[in-house]
Image (cartoon, rainbow, N blue to C red; front, side, top):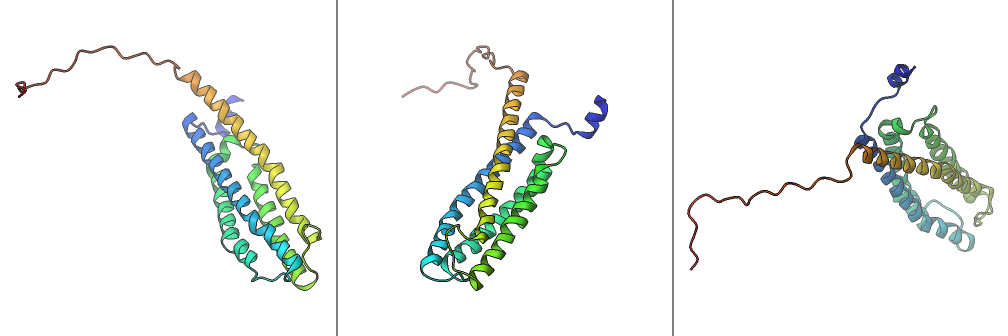
Length: 195
């Protein structure tokens, strides 16, 4: 029984596992900073469309959202997905790796589908209202889904990092003995007289 379990689950060192999980946490923080940064043009966009101009592709908030921010978020999502599956996920894997279904649902299901319906709806059908149109509900559900799935994942990884730290303290002595005193080294050659 134990041999089959050890054969299916690879054995990693504490240092390697901790490094992979810390890198995963850094990726999560970078992604969170990007999401919070894109909130500025996302709030500006519906406010502008509600009062000034109908929704179109070339309004200034859209250039900010769908230009650098959206490309950066897609890049981060792809890098995060592959890193989580290849490097970090073996340490925290359950029966179904959570990143296998979080990534397609959020990126391709909610985000891209919401963008498509939102843009077509506002260009051809009705003016933009701040979170009151059905085409905006998917955006709200997207972030609710990300928080509902992402926060437990962060807690799980932080818990595992705490376990690794406790295990490392068991393996390494906390107090290192002081080195034994040694005599001062003697220099070779003649001493130089002071002037």
